[in-house]
Length: 337
Image (cartoon, rainbow, N blue to C red):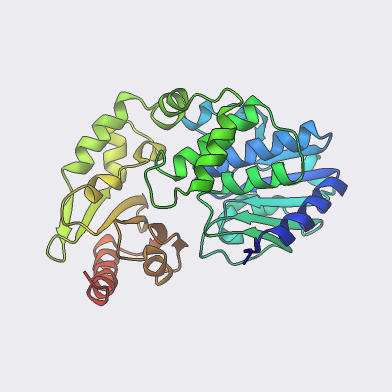
């Protein structure tokens, strides 16, 4: 019996809209990662090469190493109110990429006047389907994989720059093809992208691992504060604003830190708590196998994937930790070993 691809209909509808549109506004989530940025830049260039007018909007300037993605120079930050600019143009189509809910677009929503068709392209299982048209598939490894499918199905332009950005998106969100979201489809897509000259080692060293020595100093400080709870089943790391000041590192330098507690034998749930301001903390959560952390994050208003999720909490660190450990412990105890 033939299996019907559930994405065929949304792909066809969205391709028709894209071909008919002229002016496009593309956005991704706040604090963007390689998947969000790589997908947006790649999709934007493909549309531009198709003869479309495209604006790529981000919350704030991107720091290295993600600033080394090819095409970042085409990205813009939100316009100032009252200034005559691109924001006063009527966009035919607004596309949100790698964003599970509209609120995560942050200040970029101010450029979203409400006009035009809205398209939501994402792979988070907690996606709220906020677009008028939604290309959402939690079984895809990344948003980059979905953008690849859209480009191929629509016979849109593909070139070495587009291919490298899509490959970077996929490589990043699969943990360099180590995570359980890596499928045979993921590998076939990546192989096709490599035909355009993509070098996985170069991408890894230049974009995914291209950090300065301050990152190492911050990591050393963070590892000194790793805690273990629930009989060693929860590994917790806290990164304070003071640690950023002392090390000279940026928020982006913490990418991948949450994996270190995850590597410890017996840890089933790893969490990194990053202090954003005095009473605001970001929780990044990872699961080794048994626990659905998207479910856990949703209990605090967040979301994500079964193995990688997060949320932002308001309140004192002590209270937030206590509440989180209670819910995490409850979920662990409900999950068979």
